[in-house]
Length: 357
Ligand code: 1HN
Image 1 (cartoon, helix red, strand yellow):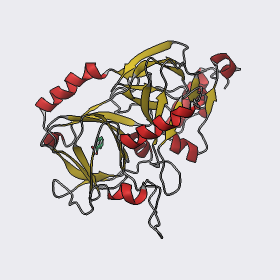
Image 2 (cartoon, protein in one colour):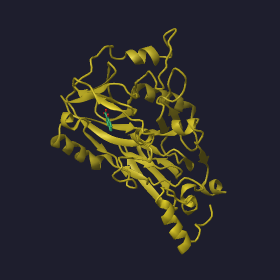
Image 3 (cartoon, protein in one colour):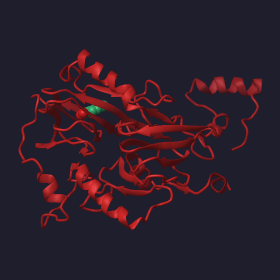
Image 4 (cartoon, protein in one colour):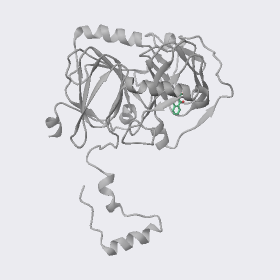
């Protein structure tokens, strides 16, 4: 876009005059509105779990899950402080639930995912079905479904929440309500959805109208086994290692309409090729250790030395590459389904110079 036009006294007076009629000159702002390529205000960021775990447990002494409604530390992107955003389009936080606690039932238009970071045995109940959660499980709370969480185990549980709050907010399309009781009644046996829809079978005549997968817990045990079996062919993608996306078994589409979710394996000693895409991604380290090098829009490189349970983010359109010191497994999520539906999603592979040519 061209440089901004000169501000003459005559123009300034004119801008002032039309401002009274709620009008503004496009030519003064066009260069900032239509830019050549994405320049996300989000910054690369890394949360080391061993550093923040004590803060999460502190919260457990300060406030109950019931009083907080959801006892969560928001993962705030340092470029988007105070906005409850981890990327420009997504929210993420780490939620703590202690033994014996209940996070009361409510529902909202925003879709949520849980990715279990530490502990096993707490449950989430979604529209009358309970699922016990284990480390590495990916659990969905679809838009407008009643959900409550509880911990009947004897250890604290921490999971990452990912929600499409900024997307729904942008559209001014949000509703929320509390359930009159602490817990929504359980009406279906545990494991029913996974058996019914997630076993490579579907009930005959089943018609699924909701935009979210009817499977709401994708257990890590199954995901891990799939990755372990596939890796034997050693068909690694140069940019991603072995990267799979979670699907809705009804139509093969994304598991959630607004958030794309992925699990990838990086074999020991891999150095991936640089990659960038228009969907900024949130990563949670499930296994292993390594590093991710992110190149900012200003050309500055940031290196994240990550290990199990860490969270880090790579903003939209920033080149990045991964290295693994041991076999590593990374969960990630982004707004890719939204971008794909709108025809906006783009990616670039290869080296930085070639990418720029
Ligand atoms: C929510 O409903 C949960 O249900 C967690 O666990 C985090 C952040 C903002 C709005 C709703 C939950 C949330 C949330």
